Image (cartoon, rainbow, N blue to C red):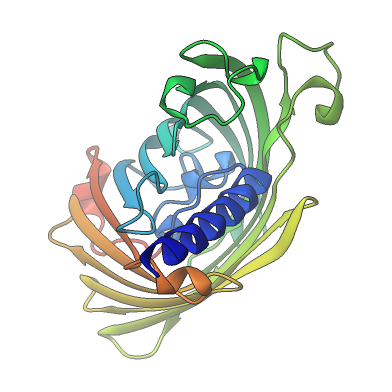
Length: 309
């Protein structure tokens, strides 16, 4: 009976990882606390520099389950007319490992009561697979020869981001162009690499219910032609500009509960727990995600309250 359960769990993992490969981009839950994770045009949208480190352990109790770490830093230049940002990320699933480094640049225009950011990102992803750790039934299959396989894929992305004092909206394509040196270069990613375009559309609104309570509904729509359309519906409440409690519903995946604490004007910590709603819940203890943020720069001291996005 135990063996049957193990086989069933293995089949389920293979199915879920197959879906993850179709989506390709790393998935995190606390993106609403740092928009640079999704959109290069977010870089420099604060008056000060901001940094955050996120660590995610998905599908706890599963060997080879996804493990993701992301470090992001961004800030304004030229009186907030421009912004720059840097992202370092590592995403490990089973025997595969992906390491990313991306530089982000944004340019802001005053439009109406808010600012419109146009952003680009450029960098590369290093993909490696430790083939020697695989259990192979066909020892003569040339796909599994050697101890390790790797590929370096340069990528270029684009995004737009509009924000006012109490609402924001953004659209991004994190990988607009990608190139595998083993293929012929082409503007069409279907020809030049195995990477596929992901489209992100997000928006949120901050409502000041009372002097000490702010409510922020938001959503994120994710589209990739090889995967089902996915939507995150989020609701966050911030008390006395220090404690944020949130809940998120991710279609066909999970319900997420989140907590963020702004310890002072510079330092913040966050935690998210994903409660799996798919068949994976029979075998997994859920997903844990921890975030640490630090804001710096002379303008941070003069800002009375932190912006909610």
